[in-house]
Amino acid sequence: MKMELLLEIHVICHEAISVKGGTKEKVMIPFDGTAEGLFFTGRIIGPGVDTQTITDKGMLLSARYMLEGKDAAGKDCRIFVENQGNGEQGFRPEIVTDSEALKEWETAALSATVEGAPGGVTVRIFR
Image (cartoon, rainbow, N blue to C red; front, top):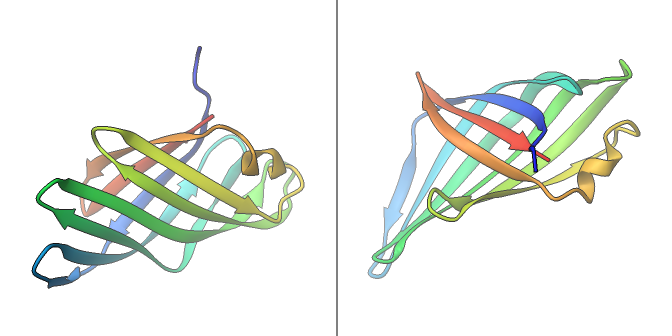
């Protein structure tokens, strides 16, 4: 089955902050950036944050951010994204949006890839 690219998000990371406890480390990385695709074009508003949990069993990533821009119908809208997972098992984004044109994204089976890029990462969300 062919995956359809919904969004490509260009993330610019800022200085990380962390705390290391006895059993795990938590790292928070604030970020901003832009998003583009056939169905939406916009930018990350506020800062987003990637929270990483690091243990002796591996790392779990959980990024949360809000996008603001225009949907394919040319209407102003917002999209909330929560993307969780790791490199081995993949990433599963959840989307909430006020866009009528994009509302099916809220219930669609989505997956994501995260690749390194200069100054940050590129996130691609697929249906």
